[in-house]
Length: 282
Ligand SMILES: NC(=O)c1ccc[n+]([C@@H]2O[C@H](COP(=O)([O-])OP(=O)(O)OC[C@H]3O[C@@H](n4cnc5c(N)ncnc54)[C@H](OP(=O)(O)O)[C@@H]3O)[C@@H](O)[C@H]2O)c1
Image (tube, rainbow, N blue to C red; front, side, top):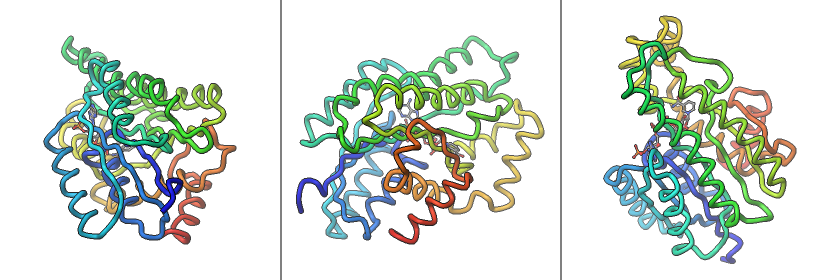
């Protein structure tokens, strides 16, 4: 195995949901001729370490040669320190440059209409912007010098909510729209890297469950019923795996001309990309 077969991948929000599904997908994809050094971050230690231990055991049991680095870093406050900590731990642990960063960590709350927001909700809104947007900008700032200059890639987990507003989700929608714009400006400033904002469609994770449990109090009936319908009609089945495939398809096959763009999983070019990916790697 040459060092070029090793890839360093950073995934924020890797303790559950889409981030974890992506990590698990690449680790067990046998047709990929890579060994991964995977950085997994989250704010809560216990769930992150539980997933890390489980995955490490499975990696060992399967005789695989991937390495994992869990980092506990809260991106909702002390953003500068948290992002520096992530960078420094990567430098201490892995010898090569970073190939891919998936900016995936995000929160949905406060799930409130602006007219109903209390001061505490506003404080939660500040945290949302730290996690969903400001920490992304700061972490990119820290990691740009560490990126593989030939093939370094940034992926931003965006959402349909970046383009189409959802009631009671002001912070979430505005932060995701901001993320799309950040992806564009980053691509302009760093044309040697590749930046893409990707939207996985609705995925059955804690975020969707939260909307179903609490959305009725603040969301419009239309928006809330749409989320209930997705669940009842089975449209969220297997969506974590599909999201993971979509991310990896973009990572391996997206052409450079898409640098700075936003791509939704249901866009024709995304569907074609996933089809190609499944034929080649799954
Ligand atoms: N699910 C959907 O339907 C959907 C649709 C479109 C886009 N997305 C996007 O996909 C991404 C992943 O969503 P998901 O549904 O998988 O969410 P999820 O299940 O809620 O997972 C979120 C991840 O982010 C981490 N995180 C949350 N707060 C954090 C903080 N303060 N600091 C550091 N990490 C933090 C969480 O770990 P800790 O709690 O331990 O910090 C967790 O690992 C998000 O960007 C989301 O906006 C999701």
